[in-house]
Length: 394
Image (cartoon, rainbow, N blue to C red; front, top):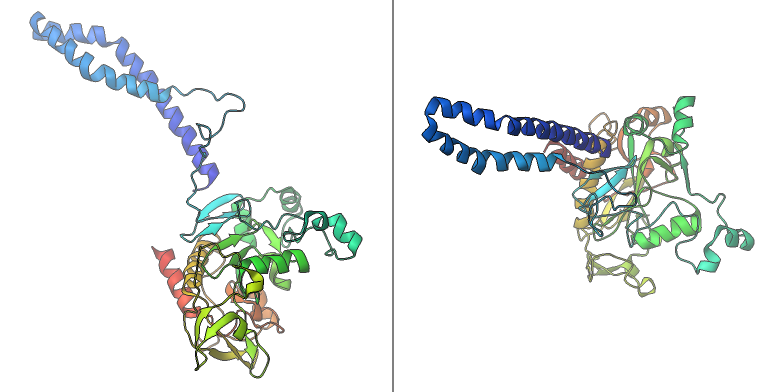
């Protein structure tokens, strides 16, 4: 339920309580006459019994109803949640933000405004000494991104009056539902979400709505209403997620797997080993030990070439499924499906421009750009979509 709906229903409930309170007092006012009338029919000896019943049971009930309906106006500056330290809405920490509204996912979520979150709205670098992180300092050093912001307004396909409204932040959910119809999956080739945000925000001047860490924690860096910079021609119509994974590589190309995975003699990945230079990697779960969902190297075609990579962790799959279901439910123009050929098989190369223009649903970065390989051959598309659909049906 949206905040607006919650507020409207609360106001309706207050009006009903006030009407009930008013009716209750009218009933109270008529009690003496009622007692006398009943007494006249039952006899004087029984009048006292009737009065006692009314006093013991009905009057207290009326008092409770009246008390509940007597709301008081709030004092200026009074905390909206009631007592100091309480929240007006108690979050479950699984909510994502879409056009200012909170939507449950069932997965662990950290918003940009939460402690430990990654804030894509800031113009400063996140992982640099403060005196070197400001936009002015970056300009002076000749290392600034092209613009202070790493995102902009979704302006495509809006009427002039709609654009004028949303440029001031006035997105509503229905308008956003009309504008967004793709969910783009990336792997980050950074290994952890902390390192990914550093690369995107601090170094490349880019952005993405969600980061998915190896322990399944989802970090939201921007409201979905924003146009994040992650997928070139699909930016205006899409939501993006960077999945922590070291990526895929063509046969014979150098790879970082020895540094990031403890492997056995057969090349199976026993666990993820974050290089010591990254410390604990910023992984939110204490002492987390990440393991690919499938230990063996996954080999498959991407853009016509054979690529190899290690799978996501089970925790990542669980959260990706839940986030996919939430997005496809809240933004129904994102069809819960992936690009398929005429035989119903996954397309593993860039979609032709005409097909991409008409495509609505979940897709990979490599479906949008011919020079991209993410999310690689290991992603279990059918599993993600099938499980997301099950959640949507429930």
